[in-house]
Length: 343
Ligand code: CUA
Picture (cartoon, rainbow, N blue to C red):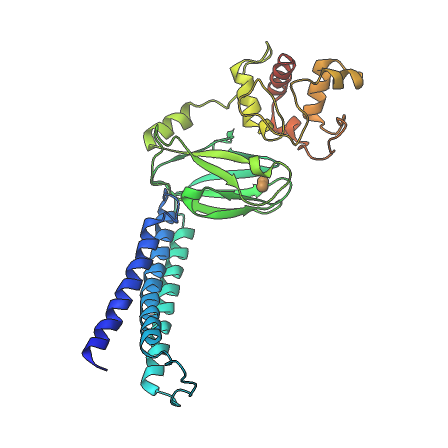
C-alpha cells in the first residue's frame, strides 16, 4: 500500500474517532456522581467507552476507505478476487479484542468487589419501602422519611419492603437495589458530594412499578458534613407533631412524612395532589354517609383503611399499618389536621 493511502486511512480514522469522542464528551450521559461507588462506576463506563471509541475509529477507517477505493466501476459486474485466509490478520483481530474484553471484565470485577465492601464500621440504615413511601431507620431506632447521610462515611443500606416489590434508586449514587418483602438486600454508599443551597437534596426514586402511586413514591437523600450530621443525629427528636389543635405545620409535616400526598389530594399541604385515593378536602359527606362523626370517620380511615371505601375507589390499596407505625398522639394530630381543613 502506498504511503498516501496510509495517510488517507489514518485521517478517516481520526475524523471518525473525533466525531464519536465529541458525542461521548459533550452529551451529559451520566448524572452528577455523588458517591465513591458512583465514581468507580463512571470510571468503568469511561474505560469501556474509550475502548469502544478506538474500535469504532478503526472499523470506520477501514470501512470508509474501502467504500471510496474499492467501489465497483459502472458496468462492472465481475466478482472480486478470491482471497483465502490470512493467519496473521486473524490472530491480530482475535487477540486484540480478547485482551480488551478481558481488561473490561477485570476492571468491572474490581469495581464490583470494592463497591460491595462497606469496610468495618459502616453506618447501617434500614430502608423500608411500602406503597407509596420510604422510611429510614437509624441505629438509634429512630425512623425518618428523609435519608440524611454524613459525607465520606460508608453507609450500608439494608433494604426491605412491607407489601410488594419496590426498588431504591438515587440517580447521583448510580446504584439501584430491589426492596423485596421478607428479604433484606444491602447496598453500600459512600457519599462524597455535599448538598448545598443550590442542590439541597438528591431524589430517592422508586424504580420498580409497584402500584397506582408508583410515580409519586419519592423521597430525598441529603448529604451533610460529618459535624452537622452528628448534630442532627444526636439532637434530632423523633419527628412528632404537636397534638390536637387544628394541626398547623407539625401535622402537615406528618402528612408529608407518611407519604399521604402521593395518593391523596389535600389543598392544605402543598404538593399533595395524588389521585389514587379520595380527595381529602371534603370528606364530610362520606362521614355522614358512613354514619360517623367527622373525627371518628377520619381516624378509622387512617387506622383501618378498608372500613369505609369511598365509591369509585379500590379497597386494599392503602397500607393498613399506619395504626402501628404512628403513635396514638400522631394519629390524633393528623386526624385533627385533616378535619380542620375541610372545604
Ligand atoms: Cu414503590 Cu414503585
